[in-house]
Length: 423
Image (spheres, rainbow, N blue to C red):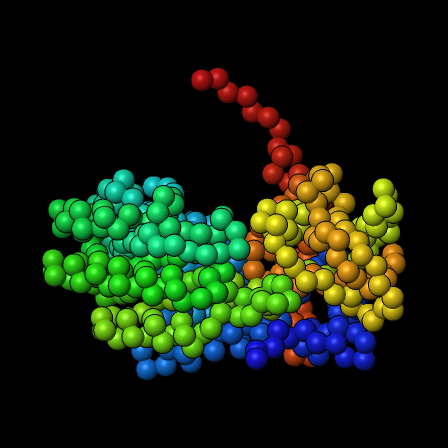
């Protein structure tokens, strides 16, 4: 069973060998804390599962875009999967080369396409006919040939914890409907500035069993065979990401062996280089959101634990009704059932409802678990709150990986005087 890097030693929760109270004392709260060794462990597990198959792991930057996290993954041999020009900028800042980048997303602007082509990305995933035309036009203007892949929507039934994290079902905005793939392949042959080098898919997030994959892979393989039969120089087969991680106590990790068995067989059948695009699987369990209890409150027969972290710091419970385990950092006796809420002026500002907790008082530290993915990257300045500090732990040492925003940061881009213009 893989470890998360967070263990209790002598009644105190540690990140690797570093006690979390020491981090809170050094950098304050709220704070995101990531364990580097957990990321290394997850990467190696996934990489080892595909030993003997030509493959490359491209980390989904949207899960955690911290430069030091990206640098850690680059050192492990990862590439990146990006969905914006900003993520491309971050990847290049972290030391990735253009050939390490796969550019996904349904709404790439002309400026982003040009940015990607100038950087020499490995692939641009095409998700609509209009986007294909735009890529050809931009590439022609630059005197380049754009390396593209078709993202196929296999239109299979996908069971996920929330409807918003499904991407491979019929009617989703993502990918090319499977009935349109052959027409798009034919169209590519008429466009002089694009070259079809791959086909792929992404079914969604938090997929816990391989049934959707069993249904989707034959459809992807059929599309690949058709493209190759039409003479396109297809090199890559991309199966996206989506491997689940446990959030609730009764959940288990995705069956990596079963997943790898299916994907390996398909990849070996094609002889293509396999691309994998995990995000959550690599980083979610590596992180906690460390927060301090500000107040205890009792109202209308309910108990509330009010923390200094809010929904602007971690929006997943409000947005997805997501469960995150919450642990006390120092052993505390007794128990209470309470809503764990933040200071934001919204009724949706909560981390847990009617959660059984130790009898914590003001000043206690809490660790909100499995926060390494889609935590800080979805944070905002709502209520004019500076975003939290990010800390990277590596064994017995820790360092600030992203400084806490200050009040000046909130208004820095608004201080210039107004320069009025007319149409």
